[in-house]
Image 1 (cartoon, helix red, strand yellow):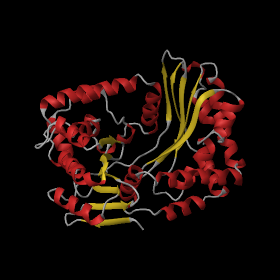
Image 2 (spheres, helix red, strand yellow):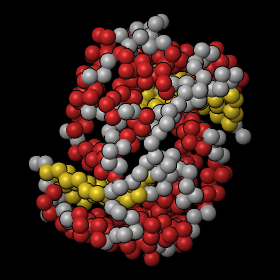
Image 3 (cartoon, one colour):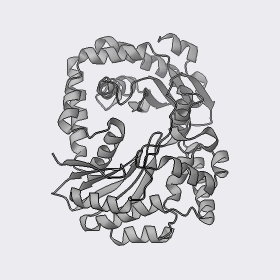
Image 4 (cartoon, helix red, strand yellow):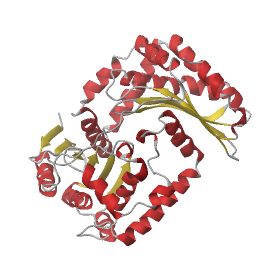
Amino acid sequence: MTVQVSKLANGLTVMTDAMENVETVSLGAWIGVGTRQEPAEVNGIAHLLEHMAFKGTERRSAYDIAEEIEAVGGHLNAYTSRENTAFYAKVLAEDAPLAADIISDILLNPTFDEDELKRERAVVLQEIGQANDTPDDVVFDRFQETAYPGQAIGRPVLGTAEIVSGIGRAPLRDYMSRHYGTGSMVMAAAGRIAHERFVDLAGAAYEDLPRERGSNVESAVYRGGEYRETRDLEQVHILLGFDSVSYLDPDYYTASVFSTLFGGGMSSRLFQEVREKRGLVYSVYSFVAAYRDGGTFGIYAGTGENEAAELVPVVCGELAKAAVEVSDEEIVRARAQLKASILMSLESTGSRCEQLAQQVLTYGRPLGVPEIVAKIEAVDVQAVRRYAERLATSRPTLASVGPVGKVERFDRVAARFG
């Protein structure tokens, strides 16, 4: 067992996954807050805060942060999702103390300089504009909003231009002080690093981190419905989805196996029927988006205006078939794909570090590979058919962007389910 977990006196969880045969280490801080913790009036603040953390501290300028990590050949990055925010680095093993110091510095001592904030708001507005010009990004955001209307989990991670333009220093500091504490944060490292050494680094760096932080999060309540947006595009971007399960649900691995066999590769039902046999699309796939208290199963496709009329009924028909026709051979193949993906990811320090952090934030403990593989192996035909039947009785969510006139009407789509 290479994974070790310690808890500091202030309550911060520190974890390592030792990899003796590599020369690098990936490390970082994962905070269990994201878009779901944002009030509507500051939607996008978690993402803006992620950007601003790199724009100067009491000890380092924005240039200093970039120059110090790149001077040792390292990489520093971050991301924001609906439930998490992460700040992480990858460096040579001997430079782990520097990387740990930089990450703690940007989390504990940001200045939120007014001039830097003005410039970075402009950068984020460009990012929002770019996303709005990318129809496959738009259809995913509109799908989420339609599936979870009027809820934080349904709002875009980037926020809107109108809201982000008005976020100043005070809301940033308030958001950080409310949510960045030992109760919502974990430190993780994977690679060539000794557990005791990383615990010492974290203990020294985060000694003054506030203790329990957190907030009440509204439950995710799936509603479903339709969003259509006519745009002058060459393709129609379509996303059809349904209520699904959370990470904590016993059927989470069933959902993953089903998604893999249904639309997870070139041998999947969707790819073979929709692309290979009918030639309706270039891109088609299914996915599972799980959260701590819910989730969605979705199917994305990009198709031509004329092909759009046929596409949605075909996809609905394939879902109905899967509830009764899925075979043992398909299950075996899908399980093998999932297991291979997990085992291949173990070769990456970054993947192992992130998996460790996400597991502790989600489950409260690391999950060993044998445990995960056993859960995948336990998925059988009956479980997959039961999950497919669950989808077949769920109210759908249908989002489409482009020349959408020939996309099947929502009432006809909804009549196929429930």
